[in-house]
Length: 143
Image 1 (cartoon, helix red, strand yellow):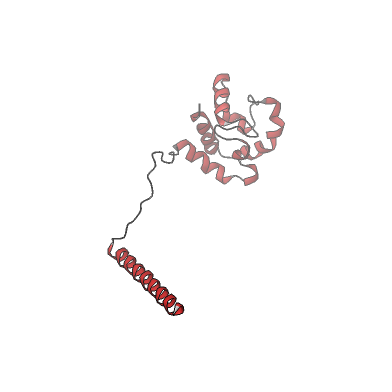
Image 2 (tube, rainbow, N blue to C red; image 1 turned 30 degrees about the horizontal axis):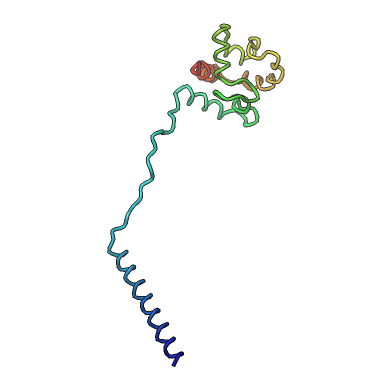
């Protein structure tokens, strides 16, 4: 008798569970599919200036080991001075960035570290005047 009662109880629970589960499936099927859109953020990716685009095009031509951006960054400290600091010093001292990159002018930003950069100047000396002007225009745009 106990076994029969337990069997009936178990069977009733199983049927109830199965019926409830079926109702939930039907309810979900009736609901229209919800498409979640990604949350819109206020801050869009910063737009790249024409000077930066030209600069990056020049840098892409240079061997990865000698790229300017290995040591220099726009505003962050790196191995070398950041471009914002370079722009500030060249403006204050009336320096010519192109002439320096051609190897025709003394270093005016951290001159004590000039020897570290000499090997890389061999790369910039080979760049066209247009490419050197693009580098200088980008640096000056950060003043």
